[in-house]
Length: 128
Image 1 (tube, helix red, strand yellow):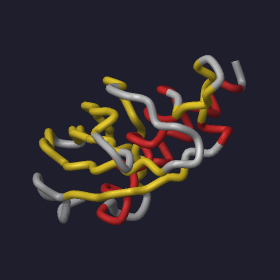
Image 2 (cartoon, helix red, strand yellow):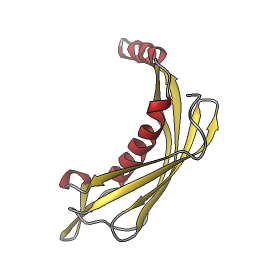
Image 3 (tube, one colour):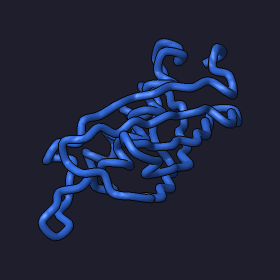
């Protein structure tokens, strides 16, 4: 995690498939839950190579503004920037574009975890 720096950026592009759509009248358009998944995935990909062995990350806050429709069959692109690091909390700003315009924006926080502790906590919950 020592190599993570404010200002780092990562971009990811997805095709808007039927599974990532919702219906609006006669049209299928990129859904807000799919946009949220794209935001989280892009931020995750930015941070992942910088984590130490045994570390992982989880999303803790996602605020998404869906600004415009993107029809099925088009592509969307998320551009994530790491804007703050507070110990193990990472804050990202993410903008989402299609071929025509910006269609979304997000503030997203992720937390760097110790995977073994996380799994142990999960196992305790499962066994209760």
